[in-house]
Every structure is written in structure tokens, then in C-alpha cells.
Amino acid sequence: MFLDNENNTKKKSLDRCLTYWNPSRTNAWREMGIDIMIGKREGYYFWDLDGKKYMNLHLNGGTFNLGHRNPEMIETLKEAMEEFDIGNHHFGAVARGYLAEKLVRTATKGMQYAIFSSCGGEAVDVAIKSVRYATKRRKIVSLIKCYHGHTGLALGAGDDIFKEKFLSGPGDDSYIQVPMNDIEAMEKALKTEEVAGVIIETIPATYGFPLPAPGYLKAVKKLCEKYGSLYIADEVQTGLMRTGKLWGISHEGVDPDVIVTGKGLSGGIYPIAATIMTKEAGKWVEEFGRGHTGTFGGSELGCIVGGKVIDIVTRPSTVENVHFLAEYLKKGLDHVKEKYPDFFLSYTQRGIIFGLRFQTENGGIHAMKAMCDHGIWAIYARFDPQVVQFKPGLLCTKEYCDELLEKFEASIKDARKECLGV
Image 1 (spheres, rainbow, N blue to C red):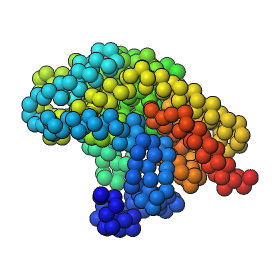
Image 2 (image 1 turned 180 degrees about the horizontal axis):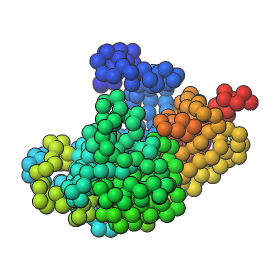
Image 3 (image 1 turned 30 degrees about the horizontal axis):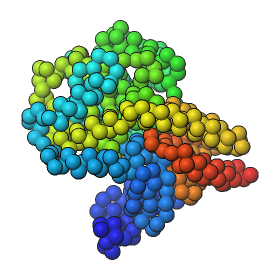
Image 4 (image 1 turned 45 degrees about the vertical axis):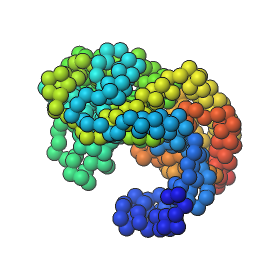
């Protein structure tokens, strides 16, 4: 077995990553006191190569919504490999049409087309290209402290921290950023009638999952309609039933022009992402279909996997479990918050998406480290280090939650003592 090979020990693997892969990223977590290299993984657990067991509460941004190595997903991929491979991107394909129809039929009202990519950032690139083609405008509006991926056009819509070092920020006036929940700033940007589209994470993940103010996203959509811009809902982390609805934007009463999905669409097994569009937003697929294509975007194996993901997340039993988890974990978190109110200050929640806020400027980092010590892997919010992203999986059991809440309470007790000295 690959993981059991003596040439793939933790030390040797770490040395390879430091030498041949990405030394700064490899060292970043170690410098924060977190030394993880994943070996065995199963369900909502994984094991470090040194044997320590962790509960996965980050899920790689939702990639493992259905757990690590979900048996249904593995069986689906095995069966698909009996008939399919990556496929040929020059032609239509059985599997591509199959998944496209599933996505369009389960999306918000008015959708017509689904175009596939190999990752969420590329799917955002497709969204930006699409709204530019449809409107014949160039400018894109996004929110301050947002993140939409590391690829070319997606990078421009994100925070300066990701783009300035690659000379993608200064001098590019085609991207405008405005504060979240500031409808006046949004209208000021759109009223020039030069904006092709507005892209918004329905609940911004890297900013710690702050919820949009009631009516804000609906007001943004109305402004888009008023000034001729198109609305892109980035649902890479909030889609696929994480909020208790298939698409997080549905809670806001908004029918976007474009939905971007990824991560969890892979089932944690085979990479695939998608850009779902209305007929208006997807004009280019009717008029210039060769304008965007990718060898691996919409691989037939990936499409079969993605189709099974849609089947699983829309099952009544899955929806019922998400609603149970949302209520059960809320009660558990409330108990811990009431016990340590001077450190665990508050949290945001929509479905099983939680942003946990802690006392002190870097309280989220301290909480993350304490949780890691107790065998819980969750990650702090890059743009708000007081917050920890807390994202249980769709298929978690009550027993898993009980174990999680017990370890979480112990973690917060330790983090509080470290930060507050009490």
C-alpha cells in the first residue's frame, strides 16, 4: 500500500514537500504549532501519518461534504470507469449532458446551461467571461475581503493579499470592490452602467461566514436589473445543501443569473466544478461555443461523480439530517457559549455553516490550535482571525456530534485559559 511504504514516512514526505513542492505553505501551519500530514482517511475522520486521529470540521471547504472516501462515491467512480474515461472535450458527451441537465433542473429559476471546469476558480473565470460576453461590458464588482479562487479572472475579483504579489491588482480598473451590506456603495458602482456583473459569495467563507443583512442580496439583484448588470452567486462553499437548501442564495429569495459550484460537487473523489447560467448569461454558448473549453473541465468520469453527488444531497434523508444537525449543534454550541461567554462571544449560522467568534484579536487562531490539540481540525478565517470556520458534514450522526461537542468544550476551556489566563 502506498501509505504504508517505508519511503513515504511523515519525515520523508515532509522533506519532499519542503524541497520539491511548496516550502512556505508546508511550513506555515507548522509555525503555528500544527503539524499535520494526512494519511488514512474515512468518513468524517482522518489520521495524521504519526497516527493521531482528527475529526474533520473544515472538510477542505466542503469538498468532503459527504465524508472522506464515501462508499457510494467510490462505487460510482468504479462503475463509471467500466465505460468512461476523461472523454474528449471537442464533442458533446453522454455524461456531460446528464450532469448539465441535473444541475439546471435543480438550480434556481431561469437557468438554461451548465459549463464545466476542473476547479471553483476556473468556474468563476467562466462566470466572469460569460457576463462580459453577455453585456459587452468589462467591469466586475465584488465585496471587500472576499475570495473567489486563485485563477486568472477569479484572482482579480478577490482580496489584494492574493493578487498584488502577482502584479494582478494595481492598475487594473476593471475590478471594483465595495463593503458588504453597503447598498449605497453598490449602487454607486453600478449606476455608471459599465459593470458586467456582480459576484458575491452568498456567505463569505474566508471572512468568517458573516451573514448578509436581511434584504441586502435581494436589493443587489434589483440594482443589477436596474443598471443592466448580471448577478453571479458564488456557491462553491455554500451550495449543495450545506445551508439546508440546495443553494444558499435561495434563502435570500434571489434568482441569480449565474451560480458557481465546485468542491463538494467532486464528492471528494474526482475534481469537477460548474458554472450554471441563464440563457441571457450564457449567450456565448449559443454564438461562440469554442470560446471557452478545457481538456479536463467536464471530464466524463467527473460528470458521473457529480451526478451522484446531486442525487445524494437532494435525498429527503440527507435534507432531514442537515436540519437535525443544524438544531442539535446549535444547542451544543449555545451550551459552550453560555459556559464561557467571556471567550466564546458569538456565532453565525445558516444550516450547518457556522462562523465561531472568539475574544482577543487572534482568538480564532488560539481556538483552532486548541481544537487541533483535542483532535478537531477546523480552520480560522483568513480575513478575520477572531473567527473559526466550523463546518460539519451533511451525513454526520448524532454520535459524531456528541463526540465533537465534548472535544469542542474541552478545547474552548483550554483556549480561554491561554488567552484570558482564567
